[in-house]
Image 1 (tube, rainbow over the protein chains, first blue to last red):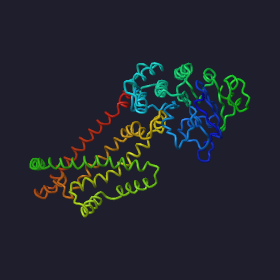
Image 2: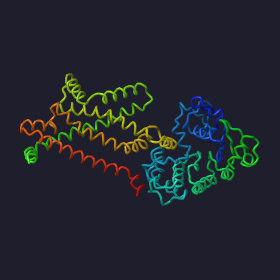
Image 3: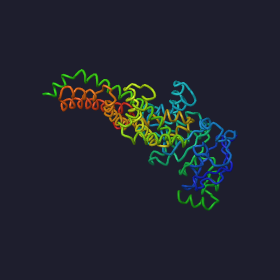
Image 4: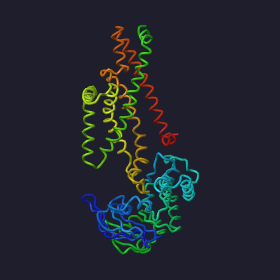
Length: 242
Length: 221
């Protein structure tokens, strides 16, 4: 079954037409990696998936149900879609444990005890079992991003969206975050990632999508898109980043 | 030495008056924060009418001298309902400071990174929960220095309520000076009382700021 199914999606910011009719289906357990030059609409597409940006037109189905941004309870929809941001956006006034439990307790209504045990399991999973009392300001970038991933996972989402999650990290911290994502992929988590880590895309992606100028210009397995791109623009882009 | 004799002579009177000044200040500032929150949200809302009302309110309270507002309220309202001079003074101080507090809170809320809202919404939090659990706690912490500043101004502004006949510090000084023919010493004493209050209050605000910001404190260690 498809977790997300969008058709003919358009989005403009003023005169700037950022998404020009995107069709995209993400199947359960699939890892989709979106690549493309900056300004191509990758992040906007991702942010339209969980309605951080409202699309101007186009249909979106989440787990088969058609979403009408005006009528559907979007808070409910977002509960089932985790998102991890380039700049982490941890809550600086809450410690690590509370950053992870704040959603389960206040959105899902779990008991603090239950939420704490979920959070501790997740901190184990992302390799930070001893940092639950730390403040976000005391963590390195890589640690912050791993906590942010745990925060998204604590809601037990059907899908996780990753928006250039390693782009703000020092080079030596990138691998610890990618490792966590790779583990998630191995466990069958459905994911859509925007990334510039081509090597990583090759390893984890089931499908690579190349975007340019607000549209999907090519997609396929990593071998097809990254090694034998058929589009000239994909070739040009890859020659610049590889 | 006359300073000390004035202190001695009027010690209890000034102390009682200080109690009144503290009542005026604290009640009016609590009200000012409530008023400020309401108008800050009105100014941040998408509703044009709410914006207009908030802007008019802030414009008026910041644009008119406090003494004029005091008189308006005292004589204006007491022509409709009977209002004690204490409540007229407290309300006027609250409405006046409320305009400034509204701007302080609005600025603090707007200065919180948009990413905080997005992160909160991305885990399914509603708008109101995001505001209550994520934005306001951070905004308040950041607003504390400016709010503290506004509260110090409010404490000193409360002296104007003397003209409504509220027996607070300044009013007490006026009465005492008229009786003892030592205005210089008497106002010096009144001034010292204000100064002590302000210093004590500044100390408390600083303590509060540190206490409410454990994340910053530990980071700098």
